Length: 114
Length: 114
Image (cartoon, rainbow over all chains, first blue to last red; front, side, top):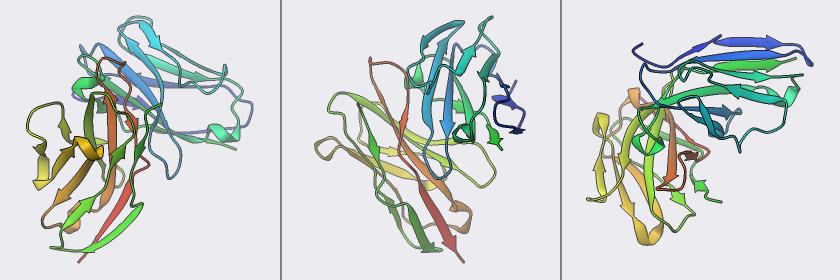
């Protein structure tokens, strides 16, 4: 597609519920990144894929967070047993190469845990 | 760990005023530098980037930034702001050859008044 597409745009989850957030990168983009942006903060790195390989997951805050990109295109970020502190905007970005090329960001998914 | 500091969290200017937003980073190695803008309700968009060469970089919409290596700074400037520049501005850095994750500052909220 023309840009990075994320769905859903908004998600309200009850505490303890599992959620799955989807990212459709720009076609042909090798690199895919997930970021978490809390209110009033800059985006914080979560994880990075090159094709289907997850090369860096150092930013995932706990083992409740899991990301996959099984065919090297669409990616899913899954959060298990959501907590209130997980409330944030989750951003996906893709790049034709590494991050040095700059990223194209999606509009994000705003997750609210109640 | 690398970090990015943006000194001004909120800036209010009148139209036609000049703008300078500060950005400093902590890492002493070779870096690539970016400014992103987020207009209300929209996704992050790249304003400009510095990889190498001329330290004065020109971006879209009349913005420019100057890389001063000795000061670890990459300040964003615009000679005359417009109401439509109202947005949040993020400085970001990535280490060259050290992975692909962008590290963002906390952002500066710019409001331009008519």
